[in-house]
Length: 111
Image (tube, rainbow, N blue to C red; front, side, top):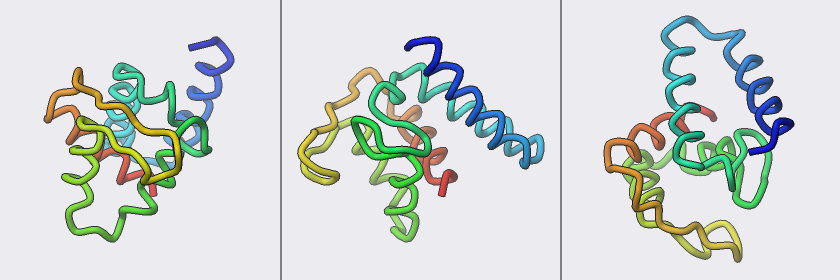
């Protein structure tokens, strides 16, 4: 990731954390760190559409689904096509089921 991209992610993170309590900051930090580690931010951004939909838009779309966390975790691992447009999301076989669940839970907090 380029230096400007890292700076932008850092700024968004700092602004988001400024209004949170310590527990929420720790959860956000862990979710963001995992998303960076697993290269989610290569195609997604927290607040804006990039190659894929923003993580905020994903949270917004699935917030009312009773199975949202499990559904997103499955999509993270297996990938999907045609849900958000023509660009498919490849399977992320390097992501464990526990990591996928953690990412899905974090994404759903971004609404």
